[in-house]
Length: 100
Image (cartoon, rainbow, N blue to C red; front, side, top):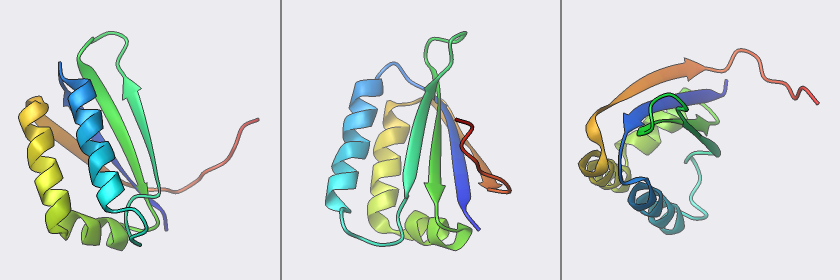
């Protein structure tokens, strides 16, 4: 079953965060078990609030990715660029469809 983690965070340094994520993606290119898709949302009512939706093939794959030392290093860098704590919501995908 697909799994999505929603990360709710605030930052004034989004470009630096995106660069950190891009660099981690380049280092992990071709590695199996990592995220399969991502989406970044900006809150229109709170200018520094964002939601990142990160999709994995399964909860187990997400947990393996979370346990990877490289993922931990990236998370530490992202924490340093965030305002306050990031909040995580873990979701199983129950239904998925294109509406067009």
